[in-house]
Image (cartoon, rainbow over all chains, first blue to last red; front, side, top):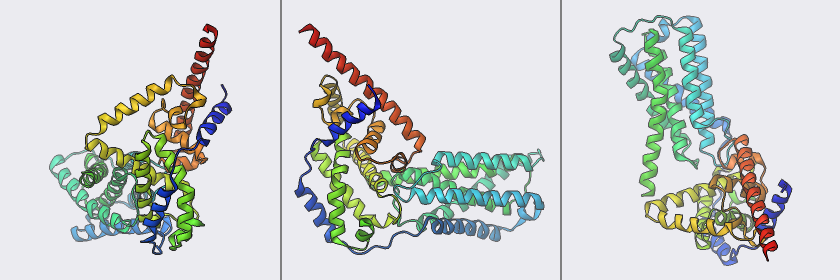
Length: 232
Length: 180
């Protein structure tokens, strides 16, 4: 049996009437009529992505300004030239992904899980390439402080990004939460790179990079809790 | 064009869209093993949702993926609520009955829902969008939030199952003919 024959069978089956009552369509039209005001469509994707990236950059810079720009002062020109553009590109990719999650029927170039993986691996690779001081002084204590600071700055970045896109509609709220968390996590890492003067490789590789998956998972968890509350 | 006018508050455009899109969406729900009554409810709920978020459609973008993405969301939401209210067991029983019944029935007498019954949900919806609603691979990928490659894979697997089933039914018919 060829594909064409299967197509024909499906076509024939689809042509059979399936009993949609005209009265139902009238009811739907009537219910729409009562609230049929003109609406303003959402702006273009690049406008929304620019807004989201701006929010994340602002959260990172404001956080570092409050805590001190000790990290960027310690970084060489080469390290600055590689770290911040990479974070910017990842933020743009995450921002685009977030906007697409908030608009039904958008093209999805990267899955939410793939975005998290990409961000994590890219940062891990970059930090492994740049930092070669393998001492680990106060590894856990200093690390937890940085992880906490990163997540603390990821939260407002993700929240205000969501606020900007609140007119959108997430058909998969958990995926949208994961992407928002990842985006916020990138803002958190940016803040840490601006602020944290500890350039030991284990510290940066483990604790700075961990901000992205921790924030991503937190975003998905918050979205799941909200959905549970709404559907119960 | 109609969508843009609907966004501007044109009731004629809204009615035309409802008349044009509803049969497709209704069939989409029926194919997903919803009963007719459920499909009616889901269709109404989908239009309520569409109406609420109509500003998220941007002129120039393909319209069918937008509609179907919302319809899928409503269906998933409905299923989740059904699970919550302990209706799952009942629904699964219905699905099992419907699926097992369809295996013994002649293909050409079947409705689309029964024909697609042996397929998993993800393959069923892709076949419905692609072959019945006439959407392109790219549009199906947008509606289901997956890649074109993943859609192609699902279609390939679905066709394999449909072919096996149709051949089996054909053989069954021939065997019973020879016996009589």
